[in-house]
Structure formats: structure tokens, C-alpha cells
Length: 490
Image 1 (cartoon, rainbow, N blue to C red):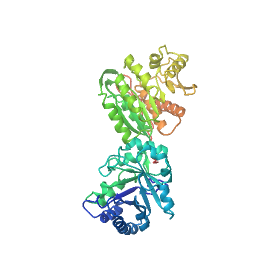
Image 2 (image 1 turned 45 degrees about the horizontal axis):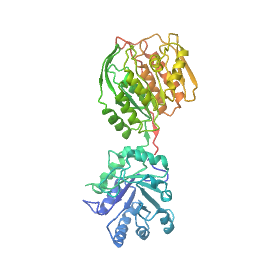
Image 3 (image 1 turned 30 degrees about the vertical axis):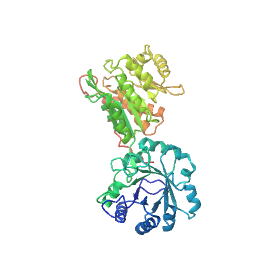
Image 4 (image 1 turned 90 degrees about the horizontal axis):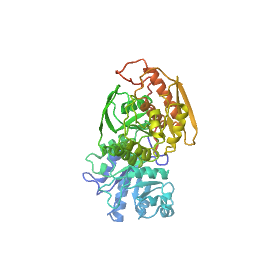
């Protein structure tokens, strides 16, 4: 099971008599425990102290029977009276430091709800055993808070603390996977079980759904690119490459070119507002380990992509500035190039132009290895962290590429050049391969080298195959890898 080493609980039930609509709260609690709940918290906002203690005693008989810890909400006297496993408090309750002073019994759990970032750094949060993020999403049962944390809030808190994080607030079957992947360690539910007609079945479904019972994930690569109906380039080539290298491919479509192996006939636009919607849908559900950007043919698209990706920091980005098709057809206008330089270059981990694209970007002739190095330096000076300048168009027997790293050092790569026109989509394939190796945890220079080796072998394996009447595709599946399993971590 995917559990925090200091908090061996996955499904946390917060229950009160008022929350249980169809059944008694004791029945709901017992059925929920049978269904998989492994920690129960009793909260009674409107009960008198004696009534709260009586309810807690009755509930503890059930939790003890199943050896499930019972936590009391807010009131230390109730927790002490029934010898509860612990207590959960908020910012306006008795503080964790005071609880430790007054409740001297060992091994008592203390949970602390945080609703604002400022609470994370105070002494009380450090004294707690676990932190409740409340609410993750707005909920009818939590009306005394102002804002929800959301997935980005969880990710931010996860980066700030190693403490177990319990997510509460409108936890449902559909959003639990995203919450856990964002960094939560445990899911706390109220209505999803308390208001259910069959609380045991509801608990069982919650426990078996999502990642609570799943230990692995696939390295994920997101491609942001245009369509190629002939299947050799664009988003189709990206998905083939990512899959062949053992990663999970997700995609965002930027344009609908009409093309085949002989060239691009026309380009139909995708609504600009669809771009951030697509990106957000992927990031909220399958956050990528690396991002590849391909064809972006208007300034509006550039702005939409850059503005949205800027919200998701620390994501490696491989940008293939698609400007010229293999057929020689120029695909974008000058104003789009300016937007790319200003907005996408600074976000990108590595930019991968070919010689024609480098000539456009650097404003110079690029036909020799020496000119390639000069152009790469000029492009890096435009705000790129690193540049891989591809030498597929060199008029020589050897294919030479240069990788200019972030220390200003050139790495030269050479390989045999094949006499074949089956190179349609080679640039798309290379950038996707680099992104895939980065997603697997390879260092950037190694990922660049491995990506070029993959393209070399893909061209070699497909050089004598006819697919279409023009520039044929690579053989992406010359040596397909099984999807790689990575251990899930909080």
C-alpha cells in the first residue's frame, strides 16, 4: 500500500451524528471500517461535553473491536476521558504544543488543520504528527473557511514539509487520484461515506479506487504539437516515440495541418482558448515528468501555451521550434518567431532547431559545422538555457550535431548519414525521445545523446520501407520497450 512511513493510514473517516442522514453514526462507522476505513475521527460541534463523551465511548467500542484508531475533534477532555488514540485541532482550538503539555501519555496522535500558508511555519504545525489540508475543494460540510487549497496548493505544501498530509474537502472517486498524485498521503472523507445509502460499499469503492492500493506509475511525457494525418510527424510521431521508449504519452493539439509524406497542403487552426483548457486538464490529472513542444504557428498559441506552462514550474521542457517542414515548406510567420523567442525560449530546458530553423533564428547562413556552432551560440544568447542544433542537412557523409549546454560548453555528436528520404518527422521524434529520457530520470546531456541514438536506429530500421510517395517516416518501433513502472511516492 502507498502509505507515509510515519502515518500508516490511507482512508480517514470524519464522522458526526448530524452528517449521517440515513443510518445511525455507529452503524455508518462500523460499515465504513469493514469497507476499508483505517482511521476514524469523531467531531460533534453541537453536543454538550457529557453527550460528546458518551458518543465517543460508544464509538470507541466499535473502533477497538476492529483495532482502528479513534481521533477526537478539538476537545482534549473528551479524548482524555475515553483514552482516544489522538486528537485533531484547528487554528482556533487548543494548540498542539499545549496538548503535548497537558496530555502526557505517549504515542498519542496530534493532527493540525492548516488553512493558510502562514500556518505551515508556526510552532504548532511543527509539533503536530500530521497536517490536515482543509478544504482541498469547497464542500458543503466545511463552511468556515475562505479558500480551497486545490491541487497546486497541495503540491506547494508537499515541497515545504515532510509531514504526513491528510486531504479533506469534497473528496470523491473522480478527484482522489489527482489529490494523491499532487502529494497528499491520506484521504479524509465525510459525506462520501456518511451520506451514502451503503456506507460500507462507499468506503470499499474509495479504498479500491485511485492510488491508495496502487504502488506504481509510468513516467509521463506530454506532447504539445500539431496533427499529422499521415502518421509520421507531429503529435502522432511524438506518441509513437514516447510509447516505444516505455513512457506514457499524453497530448495537447495545437493545430490541424492537412499533410502527407509529400508536404503540407493547409493548416486549420485550433481555437486558442482550447489550449489552456487542454493543458490544465492534463496537469490536474496526469502531471507530466517532461513536456515536449512542437508546432506552434501563431503568436496567440505561443502566448496561451507560455502563460499556462508558467504556472507549472520545475517541468523540463524540450522545445522543437518547428518552422520548416522536411519538404522545405515554411510553416510560421515572423511575428510568431518573435513570440517564440520572447515567451517559449526562457521556459525551455533545451531548444532543438535544425539547420534551416537555426538560420532563421540566428539570421545567418548555416551550412557548415562552424556556422552551426556560431548559430547555436546566437540562439542561446536569445534566452535559451541549452541548444541542440541538428545537422541532418549537412552536405557530408557524417551527420554532426552540436549540444550547447548551460555552461557554454559544446558537445559534438557524430553518426553515419543514411542515403534515404525516409526522415519525415525525425525532428519531432528526436525532441520526444529526449523528453522521454528526461522523464526516465536521465541527465540532460545523456538524454540528448540517447535521443539521437534512438533516431539513428529508427531511420536505419525504416530506410528501405516505402510508406507514401514522398518523404517516408521512421520506424519508431524497431525495439519497443514495455511501459516503465516507477515507484509511487508522496
